[in-house]
Amino acid sequence: MSARPAATRRTVLRGAALTPVVGLGLTACEGGDDGSAPLAGPVELGPESEVAAGDAKLYRDHNVVVSRGEDGSFKAYNTVCTHAGCPINKLDGTRLVCPCHGSEFDATTGKVLREPAVAPLKPLAVEVRNGTLVAKPQA
Image 1 (tube, helix red, strand yellow):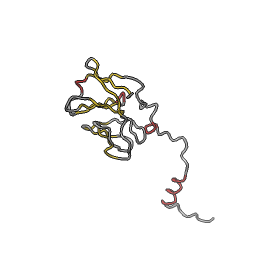
Image 2: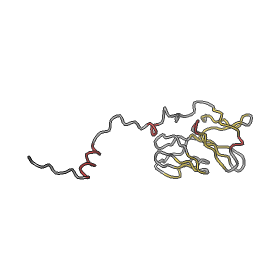
Image 3: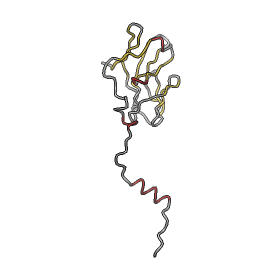
Image 4: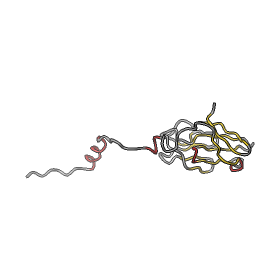
């Protein structure tokens, strides 16, 4: 009987890197059925009073963030990360943080603050109807 040499860590890792991964579901990063689809039409978010001047509010159920400027004007963005399609679920002040790979965005401008995302968030149209914020795709 001949003794086989023990596998080294390098051999095991190299083999794992070369092994194809089939059926690995990355649904959190692919978008789609997890509610990360873009808005198809207008959606009521909540009272305009929920967003103070100079602040922002994340509406997770609709993947929308709304910010309000010091002048009272509103801006809205789709909160599906432009890197891998993950729904962003954290707002820290006016900084959005993606849970999948750590991308960060400015909720007041949609601009990328931290990679790996490089494209800004998609802007949405937002208006106030009878005291309620309504977001919809831009025309």
